[in-house]
Length: 195
Image (cartoon, rainbow, N blue to C red; front, side):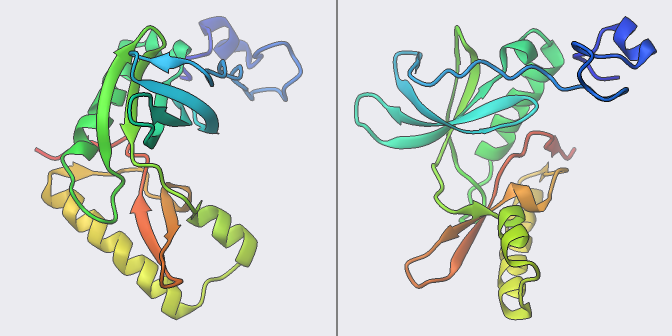
C-alpha cells in the first residue's frame, strides 16, 4: 500500500481532489527549500530534481563557497520512521564505497527541515535523458559505459552494498576533458547491505 494514501483512499481507489484518473495518486509537490541554510553550513541554491522520497538541490558550503548536490528528505517522509531509516541507510552505504564511478557522499546531517545528505555535484545528464535524445547508443560507447557501471557495481558489492535500483536514470554521464564521459552511479535509496 502507498504510505501516503489513507486506508479509505486505498479501498475506494480515489485519491486527492478527484482530478486524477481512478486508482492514480499524485503526491503534493514538496515545498521548495531554495534559499534555506541547513545546519548553518549549507545554503540550498536551486532545485535539481524531485523524487518520491527527497528533493536534490544545488547547494554550497557557506564558509568556503564550494558547491555540492544536497538531497533533503521530504517533510511528509520524515514522519515515517522506516523512510528516515532508509535515507540514513543510503548515506551510510554509499559513504562506504570509494570508486570513481560511484557518487561520493561527503556529509550527512539533520536539520529542522529533516535529514539531508551532501554529495559531490555532478555536471552532465543521466543515461535515460541521453537515450531519449539520441536513441540507441553505438556499441563502442555502450561498451565503455557498461564497463564503468560494472566496475562500480563490483566495488559496491565488495563493500557489501547492493544498489537494487539500477536503471538509466540512476546512471549519470559526466563529461570528461577528452570528450568522453565518466559514469557515476547515483541514488542508492533502496540500497541493501549484504550480510
